[in-house]
Length: 314
Image (cartoon, rainbow, N blue to C red; front, side, top):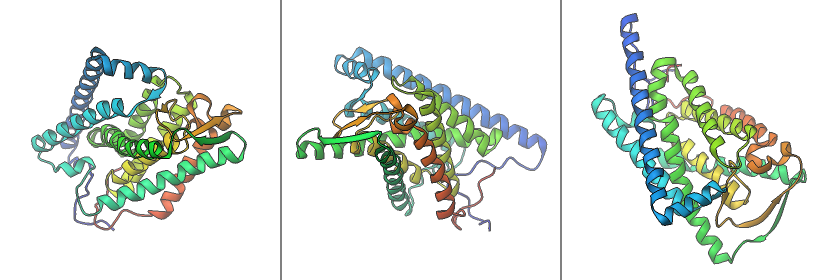
């Protein structure tokens, strides 16, 4: 049943006449193109600036060698998220649409969806890692540092991965997805942006083709949660928990990167289809299977859009 209330994340009405529809598609493309150019310029400029600062230049070198650090990720993704939000606020005023239409409504449901997503992310990461362990591809040692230091790093990484998730979800599935959906429809836009999301992960030093495909599939899962919940809060929690559980809690590589300050001495060994190789379990066949099962499970748990959200155009 379709509600008369507009969705918190809905593409513009393309109108009833062919000429109106064409105008809306052109506008959608121009909005998407402008967003892509502005964000690319900001992110490239930010990384160039960070290379000029001695302290952050060292952290960038560590990242290029496959090690994530809290301070660098907070700097890049925090400033990136701020840029996306500022652009979205300006666009909402110029386009006369609510800011919430870009995926992050500040309503009473946001905390519940965020924590639901976080629990879901912990669960599917545990299934991925657990299956790898049971099949003999993963072995755990003791703690990497003292319990107090483990708690400190763990807490800081939770905050960091929430910031990373906010940035990447709004970058690929916020304003960009809404604008591109006005041009080609929701699912074609979701596929294109998820493919871009996965492809750019190949820039990570330890990323593999299977891992990039896994990231693309995650992007489609995130789009599906957006479609069913009406906003990005579930996806933010899911994304943050998936990254945290893999790279910090279970201390295996994620997207080819290892988190500095991870909790355990973990060792992957065995065939790449099982362990994901340098990419970690995220880039394994098991990882793909877990994501596929997650889509099916989410389909069952969230069978329809909430009654207080309108239909999202296909």
